[in-house]
Image 1 (cartoon, rainbow, N blue to C red):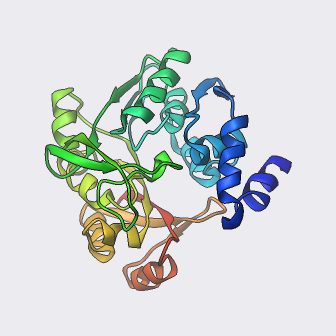
Image 2: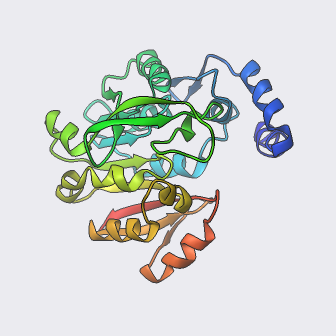
Image 3: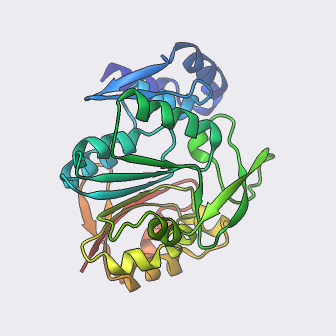
Length: 278
């Protein structure tokens, strides 16, 4: 609790951000142990690495995945970063399960591979690619202080970019002869509609699939999409939608609630949605 207090309340205010990032880069270790997994940290990423090191990284999402993963599940981790969720779900689904780890950033991918190798995971298949609604080469705009905030669209910040491979996940799944998916976890900073549109076939054919997706209306708009259309698309896939609140509870999201939800999470605010097939 003390580490959480220091990281979340003392070191997070904007005036202290630059000095905080400097301190975190100096103190984060090369790797950490979470349950039975070894997670390699990116020393150039004080946000993700700092949150993992201090034990405060996405607690409600972690709790949710721990509760719904079971042996034999087939999982897609879209936006795998250094492999935290890939490792977590790999442990849960066991040797008969499968985790597809999708990460387009070569720097993050390097640590993802180290994470996989350190724990000798046999059921994770890593892919250096972005998930999109078409197969192409796309610019990935890099965040210097938070590799989890890399984006596949231009921002109002001056960011360097690299060109990355993008693929429809329907194509990738077909090429790897996977017949169904049980769980999708996706966090791609507003690019979620395009990524999910590129896996229409596998979502439609997987009758009991569960979706955990970040929902950031501003990011969706910045990526050239409409948050109302995104919610409608998910419902058209026969998902019953819930909000995963900060306490880890699922709150049913009705269509009449969409405007209120989008207004509530305006600007930099975001939440997570869970979709369960009806």
